[in-house]
Length: 130
Image 1: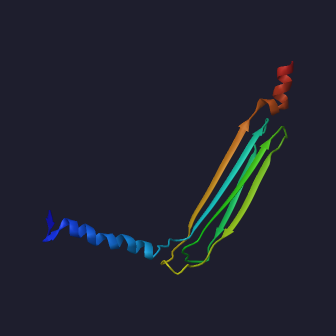
Image 2: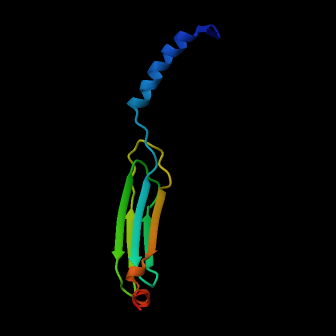
Image 3: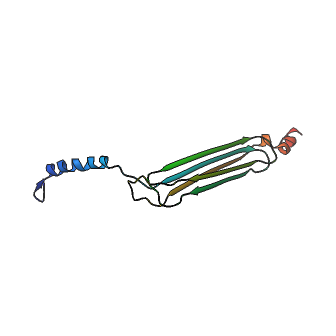
């Protein structure tokens, strides 16, 4: 098969150096910030107070940097009040000189799990024992 006078096999051969050119000059992307917070409460009668406060700062355009922060809070018990408060602060900046830079991609992920367990509820247990 020919493409405008060139054999197709020659066209494939000419594309091989193009594949290696991508390896010689590494690409660089914008900066990425990720924060993952998990709060788990297995408790009695009162719902848990779960707060995940995330502050992600970036002073301007950025390229070639990535940061990830994780935090986990777990409570299991019969306290009347459960407070799980997580405060997270991150900052990223810089330019690796290989990309155009751009706004920072910020990905905050907050997972809150609040499970009622009657075994931790004293009122429930008193009714069962009667």
